[in-house]
Image (cartoon, rainbow, N blue to C red; front, side, top):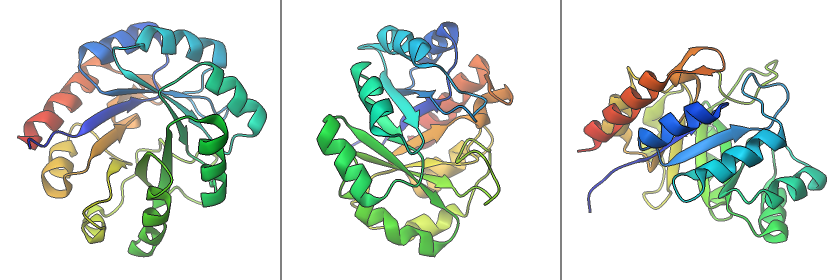
Length: 216
């Protein structure tokens, strides 16, 4: 079977950039609903983008420690996935998945090999796992910081764990990530931006092309 990682472009903020992301043949588009993020979108805009994405690219709504009221609003928009990017417990992820009957992506912060102990447990509950670089304790954002971690520690994970790699990916290192780690997927945000929160269509296309080429 030919290996080709799925690619998620996260933090899309405009209809035109969504179109360019679809044209570049990304697999997933991520929309952030988290007020402290420079990529934050109101639910009205996310609803429009989900409608625009339908059948052409998978839509993912990123939330951080959402309460039930917010989850009810988001599930009504019918995204393909909800991405939980906070410190949601195993029990909370399971509760959300069962209560709202929606596919869940769970992001887990990684810095050291000891951080991988949680991966197998969350992998049994979530539909997909994102392994992201752990942010500093004083950071107001749980991701999208352009920081990486030692990818080599991921080689200790069980082969049956499908994970998306995130954190510090860009057009300069994506080929190395794909060829050395062979992750199930790639999740990029700041690595395809010309300034914080502002995506660049050429960088998105270049990132995807390099990832696909490295997978051959």
